[in-house]
Image (cartoon, rainbow, N blue to C red; front, side, top):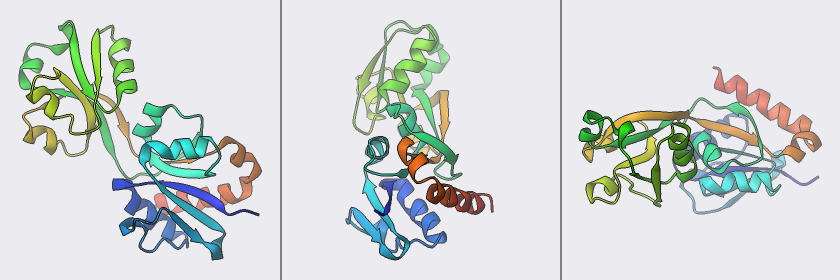
Amino acid sequence: MKPLTIALAKGRLLDPSARLLASLGFDLNGAANSRQLIWDDVARGARFLIAKPSDVPIYVENGAADAGIVGQDVLREGDADVYEPLALNYGHCRLVVAGKAEHAAADWRFNAGLRVATKYPRAAQKFFSARGLAAEIIGLAGSVELAPMVGLADLIVDLVDTGQTLKANGLIELAEIFKSQAAFIVNRASFTLRADELRAMMEKIEERRDQ
């Protein structure tokens, strides 16, 4: 049988994800600090793919990986057709609307023609549309905090953890869209075809998570 393949998100979730899997007995020693993209644990019959966070659900949805670990923010933005059986209780953050202090004072919710910069255009559009707010969504690849500072946008939608980056750039949180944490996701076909392996893994993950 081919190895059970797990896709892991690069970046801030990779180190805690590698530590979680190592606690289950998988060999991922050095993965968090390596440029290697595929890690094989022959002894445990497993293969790990190290991928860009937004690509993890794509690998899982299309069957290149049986399962994966990625942030719920990525799942909500991409809307991949995968199972999400477990939240993992690390990588906590929030997707928020933020802007300069004057927007809070003037109540931004009554402003017409808002321009909103974000790396999460789908989630941002859904949030504003659900509240009947007309907003022009401007997609950016990074450092969205810069947009209000140079007049590109009135507001931003971005992930925050401590909020220090917002504060350092003269921005304040105006509204929370959703909370996020790392999640274990599973390909729909694999959930049936490799049920015993995946359920055994999830049971062990739940034990570690709840300790």
